[in-house]
Length: 337
Ligand code: UT7
Image (cartoon, rainbow, N blue to C red; front, side):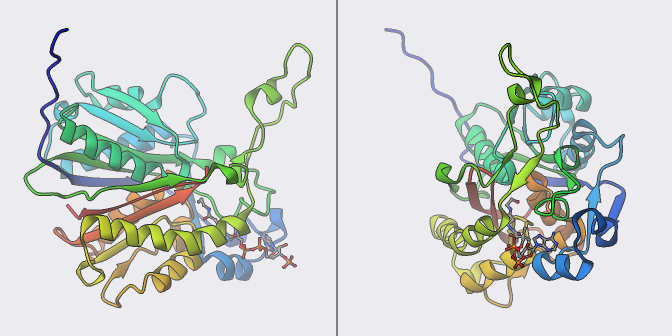
């Protein structure tokens, strides 16, 4: 039997640069309330959202990914040719195959980087960071570009009271590369498939198109969400996952500088911060108020904003945590690049 050579990776991995793309169109609550018989007051009270970013026709999943990635690569101090793997987390690239990551890698000008998509909904970016960290440490690639991107407006029913006011569009990207010291802690991740139906595409494509025996609905299979059970799950269960990620990284609450939870709902963010007993010194991402819930893009968008506004500084210790459809979740401690 031949001896197969093992990979030789970096001792550790770190985030080297972060980039973001926000659609130019800012949509206030007043523009969504009529179609869902709601009010600005209700939306702000229940979710903390005042405005959201919705993409225009030119702002495709690929375009937003490329724009965010260019910034992340530049901030990482790399040439695009040094990116040898591209991971795109999304649930709203409507061409099922091939992966949009291959088009993103090509448009960026990588030298034929490995490229694939992952589907973990709102927790996709944190799943991507975990994968990237392992890939770099295993030696399967040296620099991994991770993109979280959504154009959820394509799959939103703007007359659905449960989803129309909450979801949004955008892209965030991070470059993960080698490091002498640990810059990405162990991931704490998991799923609860018993709650598969709580956030889902309403029906599968065969139901839309039809089969030989069954006519199709011909209606876009929109995103549906039973918000309240998700809200309760996220508010109570996710704080424990955040604490586990801190424990796995050996980081105490006093050592934490920045908390970047998935930007789903301001009340969930507040409930998690309370239940984790975060010290007042910890800066908390609150991007959801203006950006809405942009699923896989929400954590990198929020982190990018905190860095731009000086709330998260290079070398700070940040806890990332994301959760959503599946239900699925992932959390890790990282060093801010
Ligand atoms: O990103 C992936 C993960 N997703 C999340 O984490 C989202 C989690 N869920 C949420 O953020 C919240 O559940 C929502 C913001 C979506 C909804 O807030 P809620 O406090 O859970 O409201 P609810 O669904 O329990 O509804 C409360 C009341 C109901 O009326 P009654 O039965 O109390 O009379 C609803 O009929 O509000 C009513 N309602 C609305 N009223 C105005 C439901 N939707 C609306 C609406 N506008 N859009």
